[in-house]
Image (cartoon, rainbow, N blue to C red; front, side, top):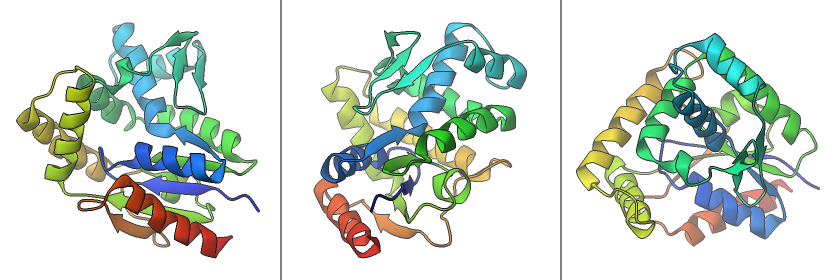
Length: 218
Protein backbone atom coordinates (compact mmCIF):
# COMPACT_ATOMS: atom_id res chain seq x y z
CA UNK A 1 0.00 0.00 0.00
CA UNK A 2 1.41 3.37 -1.06
CA UNK A 3 0.24 6.55 0.61
CA UNK A 4 0.94 10.29 0.42
CA UNK A 5 2.74 12.11 3.23
CA UNK A 6 2.27 15.83 3.86
CA UNK A 7 4.94 17.67 5.87
CA UNK A 8 4.26 21.27 6.86
CA UNK A 9 6.18 23.67 9.04
CA UNK A 10 8.07 26.96 9.17
CA UNK A 11 11.18 27.85 7.18
CA UNK A 12 14.37 25.89 7.99
CA UNK A 13 12.63 23.36 10.27
CA UNK A 14 14.32 20.54 8.36
CA UNK A 15 11.39 19.58 6.13
CA UNK A 16 13.42 19.02 2.97
CA UNK A 17 16.16 16.96 4.63
CA UNK A 18 13.61 14.84 6.49
CA UNK A 19 11.53 14.38 3.32
CA UNK A 20 14.61 13.31 1.33
CA UNK A 21 15.55 10.68 3.91
CA UNK A 22 11.97 9.43 4.19
CA UNK A 23 11.68 9.16 0.41
CA UNK A 24 14.87 7.09 0.28
CA UNK A 25 13.71 4.72 3.04
CA UNK A 26 10.20 4.27 1.63
CA UNK A 27 11.07 4.31 -2.06
CA UNK A 28 8.80 7.32 -2.49
CA UNK A 29 9.32 10.57 -4.43
CA UNK A 30 9.91 13.80 -2.56
CA UNK A 31 8.25 16.75 -4.27
CA UNK A 32 9.71 19.93 -2.76
CA UNK A 33 6.84 22.41 -3.09
CA UNK A 34 8.89 25.13 -1.42
CA UNK A 35 11.36 24.65 -4.25
CA UNK A 36 8.52 25.31 -6.67
CA UNK A 37 7.79 28.70 -5.12
CA UNK A 38 11.49 29.52 -4.92
CA UNK A 39 11.80 28.64 -8.61
CA UNK A 40 8.98 31.02 -9.50
CA UNK A 41 10.54 33.74 -7.33
CA UNK A 42 13.88 33.16 -9.07
CA UNK A 43 12.17 33.41 -12.44
CA UNK A 44 10.46 36.67 -11.47
CA UNK A 45 13.76 38.04 -10.16
CA UNK A 46 15.55 37.03 -13.34
CA UNK A 47 12.96 38.77 -15.53
CA UNK A 48 12.64 41.83 -13.25
CA UNK A 49 8.95 41.11 -12.55
CA UNK A 50 7.45 42.32 -9.26
CA UNK A 51 6.43 39.33 -7.12
CA UNK A 52 3.02 40.90 -6.35
CA UNK A 53 2.13 41.22 -10.04
CA UNK A 54 0.02 38.06 -10.18
CA UNK A 55 -0.80 38.04 -13.87
CA UNK A 56 2.79 38.54 -14.98
CA UNK A 57 4.09 35.91 -12.55
CA UNK A 58 1.47 33.36 -13.69
CA UNK A 59 2.40 34.17 -17.30
CA UNK A 60 6.02 33.36 -16.46
CA UNK A 61 4.92 30.01 -14.97
CA UNK A 62 2.94 29.10 -18.05
CA UNK A 63 5.64 30.16 -20.51
CA UNK A 64 8.61 28.46 -18.92
CA UNK A 65 9.43 24.81 -18.31
CA UNK A 66 10.07 23.55 -14.79
CA UNK A 67 11.35 20.09 -13.94
CA UNK A 68 11.46 18.80 -10.36
CA UNK A 69 13.60 15.68 -10.16
CA UNK A 70 13.17 12.96 -7.53
CA UNK A 71 16.73 13.65 -6.30
CA UNK A 72 15.82 17.27 -5.51
CA UNK A 73 17.35 18.80 -8.61
CA UNK A 74 15.37 21.72 -10.04
CA UNK A 75 15.66 22.63 -13.71
CA UNK A 76 14.38 25.80 -15.37
CA UNK A 77 14.27 25.40 -19.13
CA UNK A 78 16.98 22.76 -18.74
CA UNK A 79 19.20 24.92 -16.49
CA UNK A 80 20.05 23.59 -13.03
CA UNK A 81 18.94 26.26 -10.53
CA UNK A 82 18.98 24.02 -7.44
CA UNK A 83 21.58 26.13 -5.62
CA UNK A 84 20.44 29.54 -6.89
CA UNK A 85 16.93 29.18 -5.43
CA UNK A 86 18.30 28.53 -1.91
CA UNK A 87 19.75 32.01 -1.48
CA UNK A 88 18.10 34.05 1.29
CA UNK A 89 16.85 36.81 -1.01
CA UNK A 90 15.09 34.22 -3.17
CA UNK A 91 13.57 32.55 -0.08
CA UNK A 92 12.17 35.92 1.03
CA UNK A 93 10.82 36.60 -2.45
CA UNK A 94 9.26 33.12 -2.48
CA UNK A 95 7.22 34.04 0.59
CA UNK A 96 5.86 37.07 -1.30
CA UNK A 97 5.14 34.98 -4.40
CA UNK A 98 3.29 32.38 -2.33
CA UNK A 99 0.84 35.01 -1.06
CA UNK A 100 -0.59 35.47 -4.56
CA UNK A 101 -3.82 33.43 -5.02
CA UNK A 102 -3.45 32.99 -8.80
CA UNK A 103 0.13 31.79 -8.43
CA UNK A 104 -0.83 29.34 -5.69
CA UNK A 105 -3.74 28.03 -7.77
CA UNK A 106 -1.42 27.29 -10.68
CA UNK A 107 1.17 25.51 -8.53
CA UNK A 108 -1.32 23.68 -6.30
CA UNK A 109 -3.02 22.22 -9.37
CA UNK A 110 0.39 21.06 -10.60
CA UNK A 111 1.21 19.48 -7.21
CA UNK A 112 -2.14 17.69 -6.89
CA UNK A 113 -1.83 16.27 -10.39
CA UNK A 114 1.66 14.95 -9.69
CA UNK A 115 0.68 13.31 -6.37
CA UNK A 116 -2.57 11.67 -7.52
CA UNK A 117 -0.90 8.28 -8.07
CA UNK A 118 0.32 8.09 -4.42
CA UNK A 119 3.80 7.39 -3.15
CA UNK A 120 4.71 11.07 -2.76
CA UNK A 121 6.08 13.17 0.07
CA UNK A 122 5.22 16.85 -0.22
CA UNK A 123 6.55 19.49 2.12
CA UNK A 124 5.68 23.15 2.41
CA UNK A 125 3.39 25.50 4.32
CA UNK A 126 -0.14 24.35 3.43
CA UNK A 127 0.20 20.79 2.18
CA UNK A 128 -1.97 19.15 4.85
CA UNK A 129 -4.49 21.99 4.96
CA UNK A 130 -4.88 22.81 1.25
CA UNK A 131 -2.80 20.85 -1.27
CA UNK A 132 -3.27 17.29 0.00
CA UNK A 133 -6.17 17.42 2.44
CA UNK A 134 -6.61 13.66 1.98
CA UNK A 135 -2.95 12.74 2.69
CA UNK A 136 -2.88 9.60 4.80
CA UNK A 137 -0.11 10.96 7.05
CA UNK A 138 0.30 14.62 7.97
CA UNK A 139 3.27 15.97 9.91
CA UNK A 140 3.76 19.47 11.34
CA UNK A 141 7.52 19.83 11.77
CA UNK A 142 8.68 22.79 13.82
CA UNK A 143 11.68 24.09 15.81
CA UNK A 144 12.67 27.29 17.60
CA UNK A 145 13.65 30.24 15.40
CA UNK A 146 17.13 30.20 16.97
CA UNK A 147 17.70 26.52 16.16
CA UNK A 148 16.42 27.00 12.63
CA UNK A 149 18.67 30.02 12.07
CA UNK A 150 21.68 28.05 13.32
CA UNK A 151 20.91 25.21 10.92
CA UNK A 152 20.60 27.58 7.96
CA UNK A 153 23.80 29.34 9.05
CA UNK A 154 25.72 26.06 9.14
CA UNK A 155 24.25 24.95 5.80
CA UNK A 156 25.23 28.21 4.11
CA UNK A 157 28.71 28.13 5.62
CA UNK A 158 29.25 24.55 4.43
CA UNK A 159 28.23 25.57 0.91
CA UNK A 160 30.46 28.64 0.90
CA UNK A 161 27.44 30.95 0.84
CA UNK A 162 26.83 34.09 2.89
CA UNK A 163 26.63 33.09 6.57
CA UNK A 164 25.52 35.83 8.97
CA UNK A 165 23.64 34.24 11.89
CA UNK A 166 21.91 37.41 13.14
CA UNK A 167 20.78 38.32 9.62
CA UNK A 168 19.46 34.81 9.01
CA UNK A 169 17.61 34.81 12.36
CA UNK A 170 15.97 38.15 11.57
CA UNK A 171 14.91 36.94 8.10
CA UNK A 172 13.49 33.69 9.52
CA UNK A 173 11.37 35.63 12.04
CA UNK A 174 10.10 37.93 9.29
CA UNK A 175 9.37 34.91 7.10
CA UNK A 176 7.46 33.21 9.94
CA UNK A 177 5.31 36.30 10.44
CA UNK A 178 4.58 36.56 6.72
CA UNK A 179 3.74 32.86 6.35
CA UNK A 180 1.50 32.68 9.42
CA UNK A 181 -0.38 35.91 8.80
CA UNK A 182 -1.02 35.93 5.08
CA UNK A 183 -4.72 36.01 4.21
CA UNK A 184 -4.52 33.22 1.62
CA UNK A 185 -3.46 29.73 2.78
CA UNK A 186 -1.47 30.74 5.87
CA UNK A 187 0.94 28.37 7.57
CA UNK A 188 -0.91 26.40 10.22
CA UNK A 189 -1.07 22.90 11.62
CA UNK A 190 -3.78 20.66 10.14
CA UNK A 191 -6.23 19.33 12.73
CA UNK A 192 -5.18 15.73 12.02
CA UNK A 193 -1.42 16.37 11.81
CA UNK A 194 1.20 14.95 14.16
CA UNK A 195 3.40 17.73 15.56
CA UNK A 196 7.12 17.06 15.92
CA UNK A 197 9.52 19.61 17.45
CA UNK A 198 12.91 18.97 15.88
CA UNK A 199 14.83 21.54 17.98
CA UNK A 200 16.75 18.92 19.96
CA UNK A 201 16.43 16.00 17.55
CA UNK A 202 18.71 14.77 14.79
CA UNK A 203 17.30 14.25 11.30
CA UNK A 204 17.54 10.50 11.89
CA UNK A 205 15.47 10.77 15.07
CA UNK A 206 12.78 12.82 13.33
CA UNK A 207 12.65 10.34 10.45
CA UNK A 208 12.37 7.42 12.89
CA UNK A 209 9.35 9.06 14.56
CA UNK A 210 7.66 9.58 11.19
CA UNK A 211 8.47 6.05 10.04
CA UNK A 212 6.65 4.72 13.15
CA UNK A 213 3.60 6.81 12.25
CA UNK A 214 3.69 5.64 8.62
CA UNK A 215 4.08 1.98 9.65
CA UNK A 216 1.00 2.18 11.86
CA UNK A 217 -1.00 3.87 9.09
CA UNK A 218 0.00 1.32 6.44
